[in-house]
Length: 533
Image 1 (cartoon, rainbow, N blue to C red):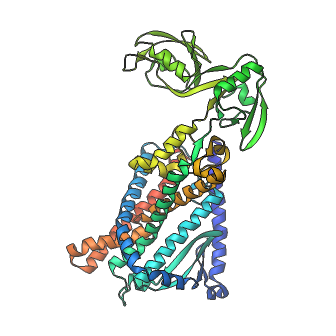
Image 2: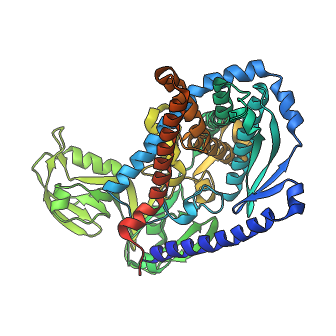
C-alpha cells in the first residue's frame, strides 16, 4: 500500500514540475533577445543553438571514403535492432496483459526515463558520463554523414529540460528530406545512411566498451570470500537487533572460521559492514549457532511440500547425522534410495518424509538449496558466491540471444540467483567481494572505476541505439523505416503518390502502436491493480 502512495506522489510531483517547465518554455519562446542568440523552446524543452564546431564536421567529412561504406555496412544492424526492440516491446506488453505485475520500482514514474540520478537503477556519475558520450557520438555521426552526402548542417547545440538533457546536430531538412518545391539533395540511400549513422556509432562504441569490460577488465578482477547476511527471518531476534539482508561480516573469510569463532568465544557479537560503514551489532541470545545447508524453496508435489516444510530454512542433519555443509549433505543424500523414510532435521524442527525419485537411483527431498549456512537467532550467514557471480557475468557474451537479453536487463534485474536489486557496477558493498589481480593489481581500486565506466558507456550506448531503432517517427528508426518501405513499394505500386500514402499510413500505424506500447508498460500495472483511494 505504501508503494502505491509513493507512485501517486511521484505522478503529482512530475505533473507540477512539468507545469513549471512549460511556463519557463513559454517565457523563452516569447523572448526576442534569447531568440536572436539561438535559444528557443518547444514546450518545456529548451534548445541552445550555435554554429561553432561546424568546421570540425567538414574536416571529418573529408574521410568520406571511409565513413560511407561503414555506414552502408551498418544499415543491416539498424534493421536488426529495429525488429529486435520492437519484438521485445510487444512481448513485454503481451506478458503484462497475461500476468500484469504489481506496481513497483520497475514501472515507477521516476524510472520511466533513463535519467541518471532520477532513475534509481542508473548511478548519477557514471550514468551522466555515459549519457554524454552517447549523445555526442550519436549526433556527431549524423553531422559527419550529412556533410559526406553534401547536406548542409545549419547548427549544433544542446537540449535542456531543467538540466542538460542532450545534444543535437540540425541538418537542413529541405536538403535532407526535400519539399514540394525542391527535391532533396540526398538520395534515398544517402538519407538512410545519414539517419542510421547515429545508431551505428552508438553500436560501435557499445561494442568497444563492452568488449573491454567483458574481456581484459573482468579477467583482472578476482573473487574474495566474504561472509554475508543471506537472510533474516521475519519477526526474529536478529531482525529486532538490526540485522539486514546483504550486510557483510567483518574479519572472516570462511563459514568454518566464522562458526568456530562463535562457538569458541561463546559470544554473539558480530561486527558487520553496512553500506560501506563498519558497525558492531550485538545479539543477546543463548544457545549455540546452527549450521547446515540453506533451503530457499520447495518444489510443487515434492516430499518437502507434502510435509509442509517452510519456504526458507536450514537443514542441519538427516536421520540424526549432522549435515554441517553442502558437501556433507550431498554425501548423505547419495546414500539414500527412492521411497526411503527420512527424518529431516532443521532449525525449525524435524520433518518425517518419504523420499521421491531423483532419477538416478537416489532419493530426493524436493528443495532448492543455496549452499552452506550458519543460523544465529534468525540471521542466516553464508559466503557470498563471488566466483560463480563472476563466471555468470563473464559468460554473457558467449550466451547468444539469452546473454544479450541478460545484458539488456542487467541494471534492473542483475545476475539471476545472485543480485535481486539489479547490478549497477562494482560499488558499495560489492567492492568487498572482489579484488584486482594481474595487470590491474597496481591500479588498486581504480580498476573498479574503469569497469563501471566501460559497463555504463557500453550499456547506455547500446540501449539508446536500440531505442532509436524503433520504427516510430521522430526516432531515427522511423525515418529509416519510411525510406525502406518506399524502396520496397515503389517498384510494386509504380505510383509515387499512392506509394507515399501507403508508406505514411504504415509509419503512422506503427508509430501509434509503439507509443501505446511504451505507455502501456508504465500504466499497465496501475490499470490492472489500481491506485488506493
